[in-house]
Image (tube, rainbow, N blue to C red; front, side, top):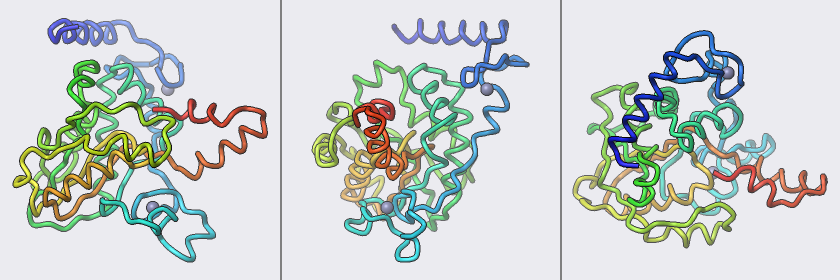
Length: 279
Ligand SMILES: [Zn+2]
Ligand SMILES: [Zn+2]
């Protein structure tokens, strides 16, 4: 579909949503008022920040028993990621997960307004001191993927987040980090395979524009962190002095690791969990 037909469809969809109130796309209850985003107020107000004890670097949930010994998860203790730290608004589950799916896969763009604001909340939670504005760098899509989806969800989220952040302290920096190689889906790959899959996929076109700057790499979901870590590696190699990662949601690995055993007890293969949690 070309751009003009797509925008016409978006226009017609918005018009239809205004004229015919539908059901909430998350809980299914009838919507009481007309809105561009067909999600009820109750669902929206239930999107709360994560209340977990997390690894101070990658944001993974820490077991209460482990907190006494370290503020880092096992993975970060073994090898510090290439980014300084990662922040997320909340866990990738429940209604937040559903809203992210509506946004990314069902092209429900008004969802970006809610999700972008949550992203800004996550970013504002931890201070990064710098005299120059912090650069928000969206994780780029390969041009074939961008054409297919019609938009880059990370860039849209970064743009909205910017509206809710202190204007003098942040700036959008899109287009400099580029994805030069299309990668296969990371779903079902081992950690090592994931690393191999993204190696060499990103380049910084103009390194001088990020040299000695603090950068915030923005994406919708932190899954294993492999892609974000590779982006951080490339930005650091280009001279960025600080690289932080910010996502709307995060997959808590400890939950995912418990699940296969639980599923196996129920006689289901571990793959069923992977399929259920696939992006
Ligand atoms: Zn609802
Ligand atoms: Zn960690």
